[in-house]
Length: 101
Image 1 (cartoon, rainbow, N blue to C red):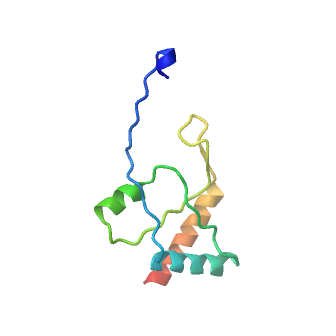
Image 2: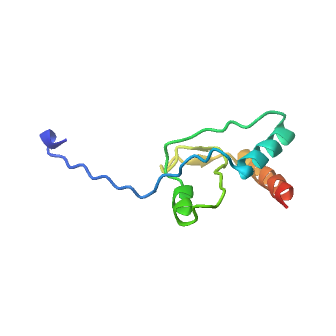
């Protein structure tokens, strides 16, 4: 970068959100997903900034997961969200909350 006169500036706005081997919430959510859709959910790690990193830093013993609707072209003028996936997430969240109660 120096060769062409540029500058590198790294900002780490989001702390990491470490994988927790045992998560009662993740197990419950997997069970609800299986009940609703007849298959296990895809559980994966991603390399993106998530608010969960900030929250887990402040609340280290809180069990949390991240899930959401299908979004395309995030942070661009072409950003789009799938309305049907928003509806699916809402119905799923309601079932998870019923199971947790």
